[in-house]
Length: 214
Ligand code: G3P
Image 1 (cartoon, rainbow, N blue to C red):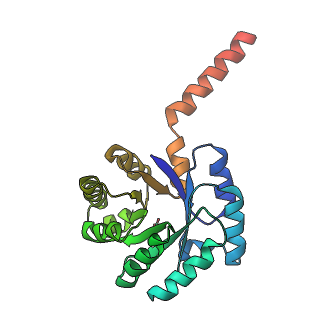
Image 2 (image 1 turned 180 degrees about the vertical axis):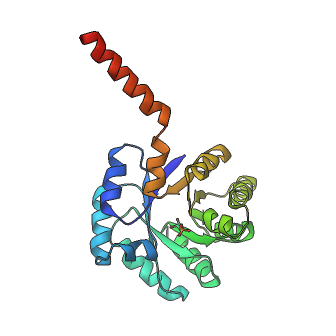
Image 3 (image 1 turned 30 degrees about the vertical axis):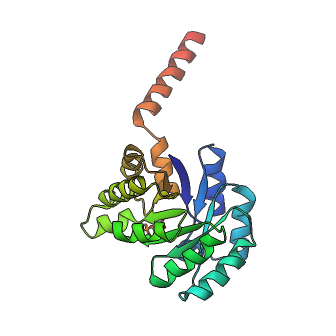
């Protein structure tokens, strides 16, 4: 499973990239706004570090404006993926952009039917938001399972990005289901590394080594 970092924070991106496990980055307007920096600066900094797919989201809502905005975003780099919301205009923009070979990540997917339509419109990536479904007492992971079945049934050339990840179990369950990608907040990624028995085990090894030397 590929792991993307779900942030626009350059320090976190650099740190996670240094662990050798990072395949890409996803951002959204909320994440970019948290940085309190100029959008172009944020994007350029990210693209200097990340050579894999970097999702940047359009803020236009009309399809022609989305396409125009997407083309501007693509001038930042060949690895820029355009994030488009799952709306009627979003579908039109997805079709137009994917027909020109521009990779689209359809975001804000909350139902298998939405995912089916986005895949048909040519989305390279589908982003179901599982945490937000869990928040309203729905099964986010069930959505991922259904989307993977649909993608597999018809051999769509699309990858499922498990998004709105809130805790390590979301990542583990995504991997057990065979999701292509999980986009993970930095704090969750750090939790995935840690295990108390690893820390205890290491401490014991080092103590024993010191004893032996004495
Ligand atoms: O990947 C989508 C993500 O940024 C949304 O996460 O936690 O705001 O639902 P959240």
